[in-house]
Image 1 (cartoon, rainbow, N blue to C red):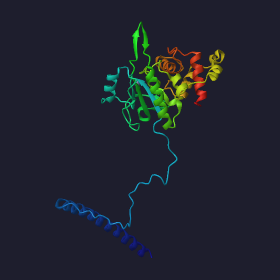
Image 2 (image 1 turned 180 degrees about the horizontal axis):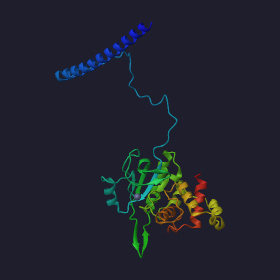
Image 3 (image 1 turned 120 degrees about the vertical axis):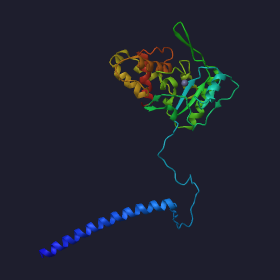
Length: 300
Ligand SMILES: [Zn+2]
């Protein structure tokens, strides 16, 4: 019995060794063969013949519809061009910057669409709002011809928009927002999304008027403002908590408990948009009450 067992073990070992040697030989042979064949001629590929009776290449876009989606266009960003009509057109049709729409200061001219809305225009640059960065990816850009500001006695003097421009921007915003399911707080200015770099569309841009006359964009309700315009309540809120409120609404503020240079610019951008009578970047009770009223109204 013991002898038979030994013979079996030896046989199995022998067969293992034999197989391994054979396999190595096979591999070496194969490699050699392949090399020779390649030198001679490339191998012919055999195309498999599928047995399919009928294949439809039609695209059916009506039978089944997905319900999980959102709009790719999330924001509308308003700008002034900081230049006259001709220079603005040249710049916006050139290779470096662009926008979807251009409103000029010539009343009889149409609103120029420079790009289809599904194209990505280059108007926002480094930008962030409501936790989205690269706002070019998700926005429609509107440029309005306006020279911007000039410095005078250490102050910036902004230029009023033409009445015809305001009317055109109002109609255009109404047109765009009627086609997208858009949160009003996402209709914003360039300075809202890039507060350390940009001033446009500036404190003379008529956000309040566009809200009341065209129903576009965000604006706070006076009743809510009056509730929050409370000095004793404001005194209890820490700087960091106020900064968290700006963040909640969408501003890219740094929550550090300090009104440093950058955070003041954020406050200034908010003020240019919602409290244009004073936009010095200093946090105050009125700014706080507006911010709270907006957060309450738009569920931020
Ligand atoms: Zn801009």
